[in-house]
Image (cartoon, rainbow, N blue to C red; front, side, top):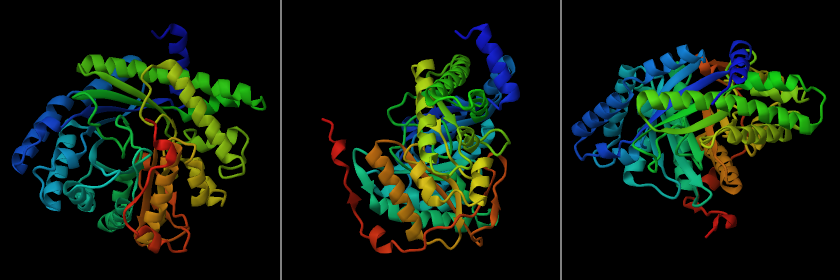
Length: 454
């Protein structure tokens, strides 16, 4: 149980340090909706999601009022649609019709986003996987709340380079389809290596096939809380710094556990995991970059940045697992550019490059996230960047991801506005040397030797 002292501390974190529950995400299995008739499939999907999620938003609002804890987003994740709709969907248009059903029911129940317009193609792809992937640009252009993800590799299976090459083309097409909104569709599309089944954060959330029929996953975020805590130990040694981060992460995770348990009880849905991820927003004081600077860096990107981020990520995870037996998802530190004012400032100052961000992804929770690049970046270059990131995840046995936005009509140094939690971003340069012959080889990069655990 959370005691009175913890409640007092939590209230201060909420009022002064931007602590919030970033999302309550209801995971819903659609495996029992599978049907060979497209109309019946859509009807079953709509009915199941609506019945499961109709009280989600008001439950989140009730918990927020009861505990005084801001709950920013209420979201849904579903079984990867390539699996759930493959029997009925025989064309890209069929899959887009399913995306529109997801969008409709998401609007009806009032959630911010619905994730799971996804395919898992770590080792190869079925015809349904291929059709869904090819439908992504249309689906994201014609819906408002649908998010899409594709898992392209894993430590166990290697990297599907045919999928990597295809996703470079799909990201470019998505940018063109949504060019009137500064290529916003790409902000709702992420590619993964080692994607977790229980991630509550968008755009990568989907409901894994090993999960229960329904489950509540909660994502908690508190970069401002961590920064304030380490300000109090400025100049102290690394042992003190680590203990401070760990204790703070413990307290933040306890808030998530409280909200998750209450939501589970009120909705009569099993509690899944708490994801403690330091997910920044454009708000002042809510920045992972500012935490790294408080550790002693002049700017993010300075020598020592990767070491500082590794320390932060590890201590956040250690504090989280002390607080809850069910810490999962991504849990750690996110380093998106557009959603973090400190990261934006570092890019503008010339301290932070795409290459340095890639190095940082070897020790953070996810990967290259919400990065705007020139609209004339080639599909092959995007595939090459994806391949690099997948390799980091595969070899290091961690989740990595890429969410790049090649902004149609914009070049290096220009700024793109996404609005809301997505913020804004300077367009960053991409290495101009070609990798076309590498990414077009086809086939699969095999799993590393340390993947053989049996």
